[in-house]
Every structure is written in C-alpha cells, then in structure tokens.
Length: 209
Image (tube, rainbow, N blue to C red; front, side):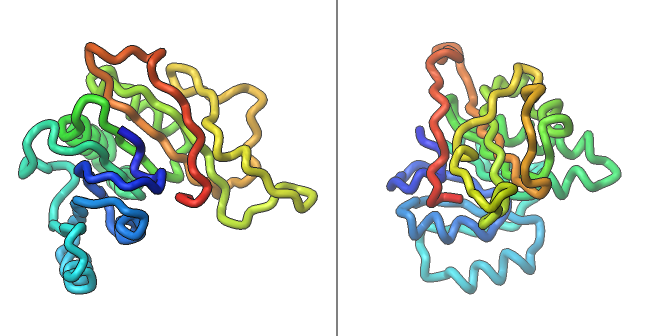
C-alpha cells in the first residue's frame, strides 16, 4: 500500500497516534481513519468539531495499550509527536517499547508506520531497528516550511530519502541545513514473502508536507 501522505484516494484502514492532521487527509480523499489520544478532553473536542465527518473516528486511548484492536487491524499508523512525548517521561525506554510493540502488532504485513519526529537517527533508530518489529526503514529529513538554504536559495532535494546504514548511521558528509528539521521515518512491516530489494524508495510528495 502507499504511505498515507500521497494525496491519492485510499479506503484502507489507518490509525492516527495523535490528532490534528487526519482532517486534512480526509480532504485529500482518505477514508476510515481512527484517531486516538490519551486526553479525554482533546477527544471530546475533536468529536464535536468533526461529528459530521463520517471518515473520522476519535477514541480515548493510551498508545502503549491498544488491546482494544485485534492484531493486524491497520494498513498504516501515523505518529506525529506521540513517541516524542513518551520519550520525555521518566519511564521512556519501557514506554517506547510498549508503544512500538503495539504499533507493530496492529500493522498488517506490508503496512506502514510513519513517525514524524524531532528525534534524529542517533536517538530514534535504536528504538526502531529492534528485530522483533521487522521493519524496513526509509528516512526523510524535512526543513521548516519556507526555510531557505544559505544564500537565499531553496531546494526540493529534501523530498528524496536520506541514505542510512542498517544501524541508522547518516552519511559522514551529511549536513543538516535546518537544525529544526522534522525527521520522517517510513517503516514498512516485512513478512516472509517480502524481500528488502523489492521495496522502492519513492520521494515524498511536496503537497503532503
């Protein structure tokens, strides 16, 4: 399946691990989106605000325990800041393992976990590369909207994936132009019939960023 940011119509089931972006996805043609948040206040507000949008379902839930859903329930999980929040807690290592384990459990084979985070590969890849998840990971590094390179020029090369080693090491000559960039990890769940060589690294679509 495609990642949930390509702008094409897709009726497969998606889980949002944080809320705020999925309403824009509906406008792009996506359907059957489940949004979760640990805050009952946030969920109530979003339910009332978007009660007329049948594609969206809002549920109060802890991302570390999503046992409400059976295994292999979702084609994609989009996480914008949820893992970042968990990593700020005193029990960060345990919380991250629980959440990522749940994400892996919920994904169908071939499904996508898209993590949008401020965490660079040095601090995020050790959590994402656990063999139990069996994820093929592609990394994008996206500067702030409107960011211009020194000299006043802008570049679309950021829409291409950044090469990384199996352990998440960036190229030695890689320069992070914008220190406030977002790191986007596109993690595809592999299975016995999927070979790593079969997965293409497609550029992100500019309109989705």
